[in-house]
Length: 110
Length: 115
Image 1 (tube, rainbow over the protein chains, first blue to last red):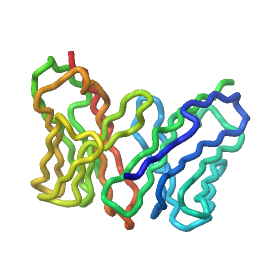
Image 2: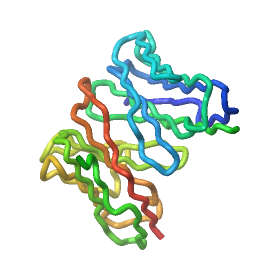
Image 3: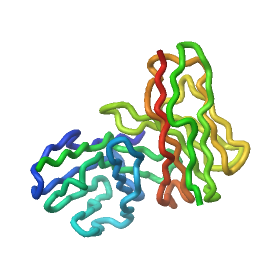
């Protein structure tokens, strides 16, 4: 079955530093979604990537889908305290089961 | 437009008790799913449904039952609660799935403690 590795599990940064989380799949994906979960909250959709090598930006967030469609990254430039939370990837291989990565918990210190 | 509504928000059960977590969505989504979230384990799929009358198992289905009699509702039943089922439970729905997957909308979550 599909296995999803997300690294790192935790990341502490100083405000203003950059942050990157990675998702890697053992199988080729149809598409990938990214979600953010604030502490005590529920996951909220950020973006979906579909095409090989696709890059999308949302303000300070940059999302990338690997050329082989087996990995993806989320990069945040100049983190702010509002970026605190856990970031999950949701990888789909075309089947009915939607499998989340284990998540990366981001803490931002002033 | 309420989105995905989960009830209750908090629940404490004794070992061996049964209960049903309710989930309802008003977006006419065909795909609905239940996840449990434990520290360091991410979101693990319990059961899912691609439409009324159709359900299937996810990664961690043992100890849980589901049914989908209508498009709107997807309740999760704990048959005989165990301390290992202490977790935060999320219901989610989406318009598409598989290759045609679309944005998933999540409920607010149910924090369940089994003592």
